[in-house]
Amino acid sequence: MTHSQVLQLQTDQHFLFALLGVSCVMLLWCLLFTVVCYVVIGLFSVVLTVVISFINTLGVIFLPHPVWLFWHSSQRRTAAKALMRLQDTYQLDTNTISTGELPGSSSVASLTVDDCFDLGKVAYSEADYYHTELWMAQALKQLDQGETPGLMDTVTILEYLSYSIYQQGEVERALNFTKRLLELDPTHQRANMNLKHYEYLLSEQKVEAMEEDERRQKRESRGQTDDLLKYEQLCRGEGTGMSEFVSPKNVCILLQTFNVFFVQIYVSFTEISEKGRFLLYHRLRRATVHDPQTGKLTTAHYRVSKSAWLKAYEHPVLDKINQRIGDITGLDVTTAEDLQVANYGIGGQYEPHFDFGQKGELYAFEESGTGNRIATWLFYMSDVPAGGATVFTKVGVTVWPIKGTAVFWYNLYPSGEGDYQTRHAACPVLVGSKWVSNKWIRERGQEFRRRCGLQETD
Ligand SMILES: O=C(O)CCC(=O)C(=O)O
Ligand SMILES: [Fe+2]
Image (cartoon, helix red, strand yellow):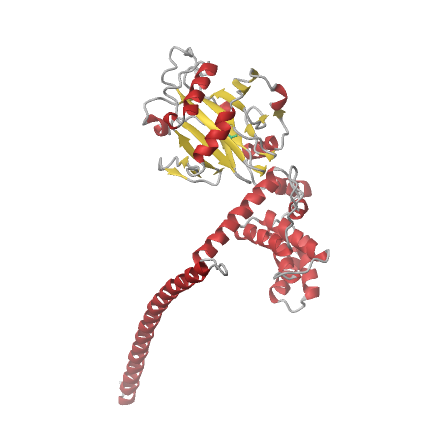
């Protein structure tokens, strides 16, 4: 190695060490900066909270807390999802929702272009392109009808619209909307790229040949299971209704479908409706379900309501109710669960489920030593102006809530086996609020009241 090569090597080494040194110093600076930012933001938020609280105490103007702002946006997302649930279940078109002309409702509250855009954006963030398309198209329609644009402009809406249509496999329609966008903004980079991409797909016939019918079917079912589609269908009343079988007398009407007995009863028990609610106002909590994996109670998107348990000693009327249920059903209610009162707001629902503990998950009922839920007594404590029916998805029955009535059914065969025909659900409330109470009756104590069956499905 020559002298000049050695010198070169040393210079290179010095350069590398210098670079390493600078990188380390920069890294330290970045770390320091992050920590400082964290502390400053923390301090800032404390100061902001104090200032906001102080201004609010003056009572001149009300400022929301920053955490509330975040909470508000998450509430908005939840509300958006509830609205789309209602839209699907009751097959409401976006225009009906946007103009506020809901069935059973007299109040007219309309949505702005920005509201429609927001709804589409929530759907988009969940990769739900079906609803993205519907809401972006509604936003566009309102703009085309001359509504003054808010924060959202036609170009942005067109971009979301064409992309969601493309995602659903309709390249030609996506291309048309992209062309419309480019007429408004010819230099839009993404739209120009998309245009080329769509044209390429169409020219090379790369688009999967999916029949129009098949595509429509796929869109309409939104990837939902048959069980959920049946649930929605029954919620709209497209099945056997029970209300016509009920007469306003204190009698039970029996309808036997397959193995399930339903009884809708006028119980003329106004106290439960009035007192039950009164006792509860401060105790209602978001309803939970058992997580089959962990066995723990948790909230779930498929059960949206608030509920609370009422113990018999809390009010004389609760004791009376227990006795009445016992007298009518002939079952022992001393082993039954406390009365659970539930309230569903707009969009509140409980998707298809069984009330009994299934094999392998009986732990939920094992602790009490009173056995599985042999039967369900469901009290309707309010009328519901629209939506909110109880539906039995396997047997195809819809029960409309009528204040002062109750439904009763056995969840188990006399053999103790779960009856899978009892699959049922609470439909989303469309207008108003739904109040119900449940009494789940247990197996213990019924040994001499309901004869055992020898066959599994006896
Ligand atoms: O509210 C209803 O209609 C049904 C409620 C239900 O099935 C339940 O709470 O288990
Ligand atoms: Fe249930």
